[in-house]
Every structure is written in structure tokens, then in C-alpha cells.
Image 1 (cartoon, helix red, strand yellow):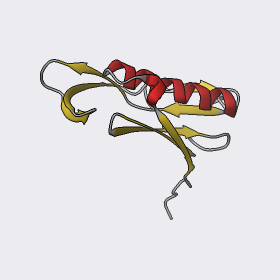
Image 2: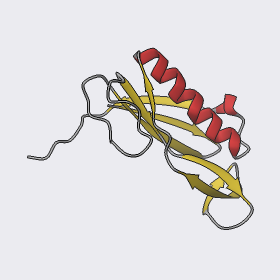
Image 3: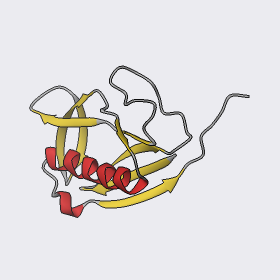
Image 4: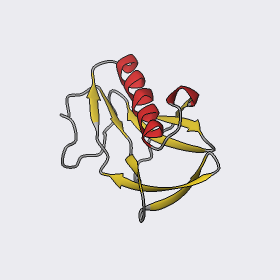
Length: 114
């Protein structure tokens, strides 16, 4: 499992990329179990009132969250590029220049119940 973290505007967004052989979460809308790589990350947008308050680029932004949109991919390169594009898009939706997003990809071990 890879954690793909994007940072910009003084905040960050992290999503999870499940790799071949790892069991991604199953829920309505999840991709076919045959997908080799599955990307899961929040989607959000700015609202005038309500939502969750977040400080972004020195201004308070109210965020409304949508259900995560899981996506399946055949290759790791496709999945990582799509993950980065997804994160850039979320930042753009709240007024942050997507070109300013810095990424970190970190390997995380899946935890299993004993």
C-alpha cells in the first residue's frame, strides 16, 4: 500500500494506493476486484458556509466532502499518475494552484488482525 501525499497552501491531502495482491476496501462504487491497483482518496470542494473549516494559503476555506471515488488501474505508473492528478484537482477546487503541489509517496505496510 502506498500513501500519496500532496502538500500546498499550508495543508495536505493523502490518499491510498492499494497495490497488486493487497485487498482494497469494498463498498458501493469500488472498482472490480480484478484491478491490479486501486486508488482511494477524498474528494471535496469549497462552500460558502457549513462544511469543515480549513486554513489554506492564509484564508479560511469551508470544505464539503463527497464520497471517495475509488479508481482501478492496470499498472503502477498509471495509478500513481492518476493519484497525483486527483490530488492536484482537489487543490484546484479550493483555489490553490495545482502546479504548486509537492508530492511524497510512502510505502505503508498493511495491518492484519491476529
